[in-house]
Length: 110
Image (spheres, one colour):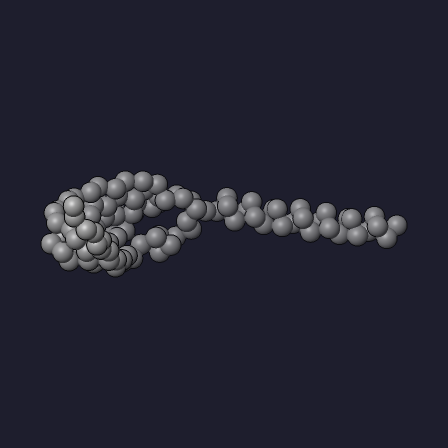
């Protein structure tokens, strides 16, 4: 009877944990995110952009920025669009995002 009692306890705990897990996923939602990033470089580069998160019919601003270094020349603009999943509130995504990076290469010509 003791094994049966332990088995029952483990089974009840597993079912309760699964129920909590399913409930938390059920309350999570998704939103649409769109932003554009401008990049420019002449040895030292920079990037910046902005966009919006649309969540529950409201729009929330997003800012993106970064700095890079290395042998780089040029400029570009990139558009991003996607779906953000498993969020409960807009603050899970919105805010200011930044990055820094560097790179280089050394080589010997012929």
